[in-house]
Image (cartoon, rainbow, N blue to C red):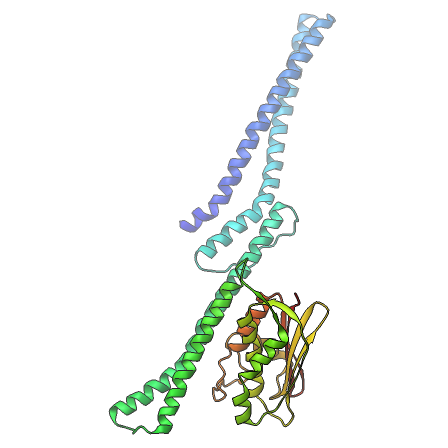
Length: 359
């Protein structure tokens, strides 16, 4: 019954529209016929060439013709109007059905709209809206799934070890406590990165945000200073070649991007040559690139590494300490500065780069 009622709603609108048209057209035709009838009868009577019998016959014949013409015009016009209006509102009926399915939590298939008029534009915008909502829903589900996956393993490890310690199954030693400490540190780092990602999601939607003019050469040098101890312990060497260039940026944000790229280059380093950091002042932008050798990144996955929680390792191993958020945060920051970020690879030699507009 409910389904029948829903399908009847567009038809009811069509019938109401057709009825209104019939009333308007019929009124116009009847008034026109009445005017034509009286005018013709008056003119013929004024000519004085007919007697009363002929005049009555003329009036009767004219009235019959006008009546037949009026009825035929109303019927044919109403049928044509009904057909054309039904064809015109068919997309509207599809829109109503699609919005009802969306209200029920479903995502309808795109509506066919070949015309370029207002109705066609409405259908096009509606299809884009449905696609955007579906993509948002898919991204939310993926984010929840990724968060669940990312937190489940370290929390399970912590819970298992703490239960074992509490029940006396194992005895604690410095190595175990260090492992537990590393897991908690990993969780804290992940939460901090999620907060940073949330912050840049918010900042990117603001029409105004505070920036300052800084020299990119100085930012690269300051960021590199934070890795001197790590470089000493890992034995990795770095070559730096930077030019001066003034940019208008969030100082901390750009430093975070540079630090993320350097950290990844060191963390995933596999080779014998040095890591090269280059800063170039181009025509309208400043370009920073970090080049180093590491595991091969398939071409099909190079665009995905900037997605949240994405890691090339299919097992999603954590032995390297990565969370899959660093590059996603970097992309958010660079895009907020109207810049670009990307990667270029030659076998196992990778260059991560980004640009920001010069002041």
